[in-house]
Image (cartoon, rainbow, N blue to C red):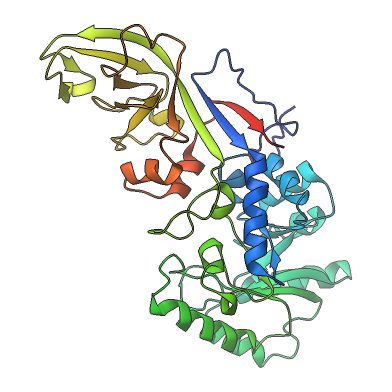
Length: 381
């Protein structure tokens, strides 16, 4: 059965809800590659612990499948974004690993979060007060992390709030402080001065709080060096094969492949209008193939990219539709490509990062946008 507890996870046994026969496209997720990426990151971290970030359903790849794969490599600390994700993950993997909720506690969620045994990352004094009040009502201490804003201006307690807490002897009554963390805004730009400035501010702010393990580095932050590793690193994108060092060779191994089925082929003459608005007209007689994948599946309408077949590049022609894309397959020998054949959208010929570049976005958005109509095939697990 599918877990419909609010996090949108795939079936716990790895089965897809859409069979390969009826699906328009197939998404292959290599759990062995995720494990290898975890090993590479862990080796780079040395003595620091390596967590796993599973927000947005494991970056769209299925947190209920990714978490056990990481656990086999010794990962026992996971981060999600929202309490609903944390509760769904807890239901999927059971008790044991720690699950931290990065976006903290929405008002009124405290009792449900505590009952699920997940750990909120407290981002404001009001969240801290609410968590402390619950601890008082139930008569036991509650675990928490605190996020401080070291310069990203997104989540976390601003410096003035941290300084005020430092003067409150009762601020953490009933709270078991498990972690003090912050988040780097420019980690994918190693030379950006904000990185060192945030590290120094993080050191200052955590020095005002009760002693606890510290965490600053995300995927790219791991590659800034040991000074950024602290006690715990929180890689997400790098686990899933996205390059954490843009502009340099990707140190991670690819995790996903996406193949779409050919729905129909045809020939058109010179001047034929192709797709909505006739945005493209055939400059010569062409052979076309329409594939069963479109913007409803997360392939961005603005992504003027290509597919691949037998090493041959098949450019998109016309606009990306909701459920289909038209390819120019004239470079493939006549009769070689037909209905039901698979063309590659992501794989050895075109990485996630390359596909993202065609859409003027990042690999994170590509992965988390991939739709629910695919047949999902898990390998290497």
